[in-house]
Length: 247
Image 1: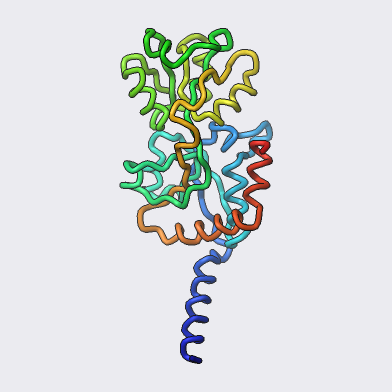
Image 2 (image 1 turned 90 degrees about the vertical axis):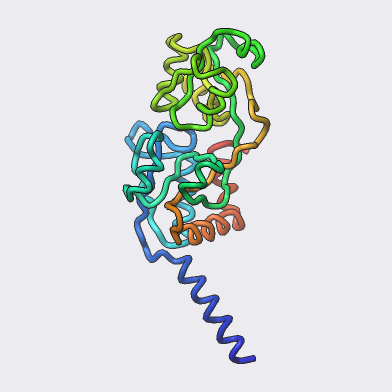
């Protein structure tokens, strides 16, 4: 019995050690143009839901998250090249992506939407499909994949980030933008009176799970998952969620 207790204690101690990153600085790649998940405020600071989630996780497992702005297109290649330790950028977990990276447990669920100019509010998905309206999206995203599936490649215009796509919508260069619903609502507030999330739940409600992203085989996944569970269990996650989404 004593031997069994010693073995169990050793296992528990090793698990605790694995969750303690001993102050390690984690360089986090992120496309910081995707509010409210990550964006740059007027003071030049990177802020957002994802930033607060990572900081909270690091408080639990003794690490420091250092966000590094990078374009979403090519972000996984940059991760594989070692430019950063992980990617935190509102990344949807997909089977195709899972072939080249490892994901944490999911930490947010989203559905896709379509942003329109305010004067076009009321357009339906079927009306857009039947029209020759031009559609915008961000390159490399599941939004771009959905836009191509729904409307065809010839009608699709791709942009480096969603702010550029939304500005193209405002300027009349495109007629609609496929975007995650929560981000669309943030841009709706930013460009109040000009942009509206005209069609919500294009892929159904809460059908896309976000995950934190790592190089394949990285042991960091286990520590981050442990920290994520800690903040979910003690209410920290709920506090951060309420801060950014209000419920």
